[in-house]
Image: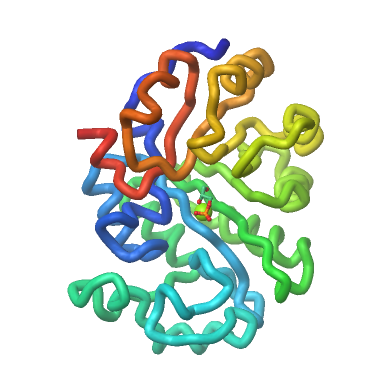
Length: 246
Ligand code: G3P
Ligand code: MG
């Protein structure tokens, strides 16, 4: 079993920023995470058609901006007219859709650490283009910004490991496959990020025996994770850090 862990600003990550109170994957949501006392932000990264890395969850603009259409059809110049805030609330009108370098700069200024979830989409030209782009952006981060990389795609994590073997890598799963320990070892990952409903004491035991950190997503009810901290749960990714930290 892993050593008991407690709820602290370092064990609570803001999912897409504090996305319960501000538009997800924007600097406004990162600021809200900082204001809620979190020290880590999880954000989603994908590439536009011209290879620009942007911070957005979906493969289209439709749900979270004032525009529609695929990321594949866009280039960096198109970002200027995009409003990623009004869909969430009028008070966020004009909030930009950030590039990854812009997000990294903002997080450095806010003193927040970064969990980059790399999204693999069909329009990406290659795995190498995606991972080398993310790696280059991370090389420009402030020295005080800690980073971890997560993905549902083990090939993304393996590619990041080839680029820098010191990256902390977290494999994302909704449910654990039977060979999850072998997959973690093959990457090699240092953590798993598991849907909170799939967590059980046995997973924490087996991960703990091998020194693998376990975090859960996306849990917005602290009572559901309460039994697991003393069994070694390493962290929770939540839309609303204040629920855990207040
Ligand atoms: O990193 C945890 C979580 O963000 C994974 O799911 O779909 O919210 O990116 P999703
Ligand atoms: Mg994510």
